Length: 600
Image (tube, one colour):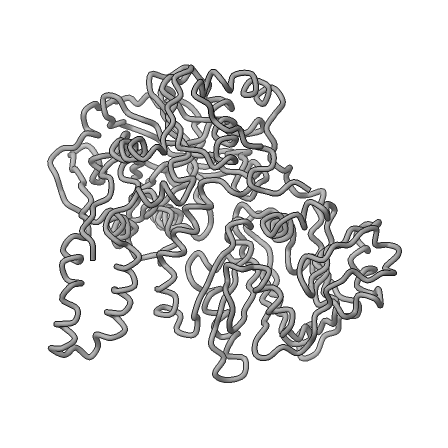
């Protein structure tokens, strides 16, 4: 294994980006209220560089964004060879037991890595250069991204908590709406480690100590994003990505060790029983999440460098930075799936749908219906339990979504291979369900040999109520039509569609079929399996709903859904007029309305 060490701090990472030509410094004064976010969106839409805004209105500190918005920059963020380490670790666990002298010798190259993992205690760190109490959170250049956002939000805070019962640590990223100089919201969604710790503290009637890191090694940020099992420390993965131990400094005034190379550390607590309205906020599904009550973080003390740099990101329609980070994490962790879920050969969640909306799995089927045993394992595993719809097959390339869908549709028997489970939990940010955190899940199997030849051309005489149709892939037709709630059933009864396994009903057909990314985003973020899957004459047999072709998926925008994200006109005109001022040396301007979605 290579011994290359990753950048130890945010500013060391910026040095690497500058040396690689992956950093653009903007010296014109910019506003953290909407302007920075729109510049970021246009640059990332054009596959542009990381951005360092040196002069931010209303703050003495600078802002960096788009740090991870390309595979090129991600390659500069880590040390060692983390993918090889994970593969070797899995192989070690699978092959080592029972141990023998030969196995020990074969694993000798793995041992030095183990001694470089974990945390290293240090007496002081750069983050302790300045201590502020009472805190002044209003001086941090926290950004606002979208016009209807409820305020400015910290978008890359590394939130550290410990289990009140067992002391196990969790490092997660949870958005934090700044309320005033000393307090923020704490957006603990369901299924997140920090939220579990807060739940236990509330049960005991105690405040939960919280430490928030801003900046630090890129490896710490990626570790905080990883969907690890609840009791596996994210700081351990961060150490793997860094290629050495993480330096943590202890101070008597903080309940936790501080990430020594961070730019800021915010030390405080979340009190039991306290909630405050948080939001709205434009989120990574590409729509607004609405106002809901969430816990409140009270900051008591701020540790910072003398000249800290504030890291921020922007979420919205795909692809944004979270897409590149999410896919990199999946590549890193994929070797673990067969270890923790033996029947699962491969698994991929589609970032174009916000990750939780759709996943595909390749499984073993050594006996009839073993595929469902693997599906249940996936839907019961940590954050994967929030998956809304799961496609299950036994071959193919999961990254080729068109190929996966075609493979499943050629093999599925809708009468027996479609399962819909109602009244379950759903990702907090998914508003397709009936209530916050509630919805349904679906599993569609496509196992074995093909059982049908899939249609490939639009039927010539569809007629009313269909007003337009486009083939997305063999077996999947996207249609528009005139009608309300009864329209999906009416379409399912059209005789000319009986040979189509899947028909997607959209109110923007041309946009939805312009690319695979468009289809994924506009289809799976806009449906709830229990309410939006229809067939002509469903019937119940042995408590199972039996459906026939075509299966109609209603992916229309419903009146209850939040609005799609668009830049407001005033900010757009400001950025239009100042583009050459930001980038006097030139920089391509992307389309922030579309992102990486194709135009129809």
